[in-house]
Image 1 (tube, rainbow over the protein chains, first blue to last red):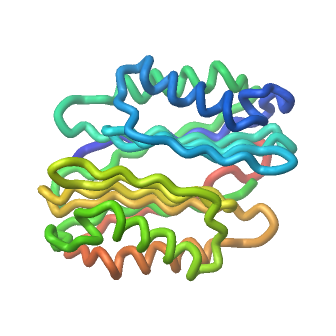
Image 2 (cartoon, rainbow over the protein chains, first blue to last red):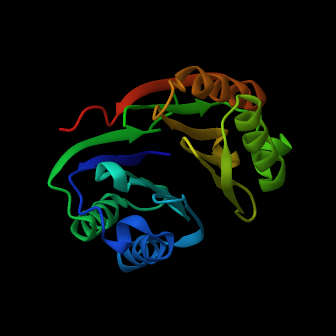
Length: 121
Length: 121
């Protein structure tokens, strides 16, 4: 069950963008980006913090997307994890990751890509 | 927004355990483990694959838990990610991780712990 997990930390995002502060536009962004990339959405859950901030996940047939925003710090963490069960979904994961990054517009980023699973340990 | 992200791949899990094959017992396990550890659950979403397998996430005030099971392979991937916004939640994340591992009983494991965020890049 080989897979690839992309992890981002995004700094200096525009703190007042609705996609950053409000659950509903962020939900639409994440679900839309997953579908646009050809991934299969099987569920989602987004939570609005008060006075600000969002935490959310999109469940995929291929695994998941998770995102957390901290508007007071202009900071986001993003996870895009896909397994490559019947086909290599790496390019789709990268497409989702780039779409989210374009929308949230970080000034500075950190990025890690981690292999998950693979042959039986 | 320093945080710690625990990633597990678990092999050789008993493939017929309900907590492994069915969404509802796995949901109860994950939500219960989070609350038991003193983390704050703000939402959850679990999806049952047919004929088998579960994908699910628990949204936390402190970030998230994500879990995917592949009963046909006796395989699980687990993520427990907590931010340390006002207090160090590392011990709570480790407690959740161990509780899930005890319940899913892998024969072999791989483990990574990754620091997220930290000082502005």
